[in-house]
Length: 138
Image (cartoon, rainbow, N blue to C red; front, side, top):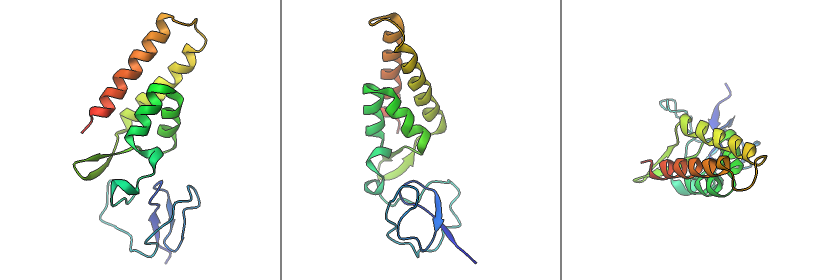
């Protein structure tokens, strides 16, 4: 019987003998490790926050949200966003990812408005508020 494990980088299912992930290219250090069948969270098996790719970390998404919102939207669309909560690696809930996507779409809308308009100011304020909420998430 063929066994599959989750990629350590992006969480996609790959064969247990794969040396790297075909989707994201992340090396699989323990490719022959048994599948953790007791896991129900659906999270990729990351042992430490240092194993999470830099573009999947909370600080990068906040920085992208405050500078160019579509960066945060692309990260939210392409996978999970992780953060460190007192030594435990957790992922942001789905509602945070939806918020990032909405702000990204609103950013594109504000590109069609005059510079300094109320819509651009509102988009900036919403981006700052969401960045604060994500930053303060424990």
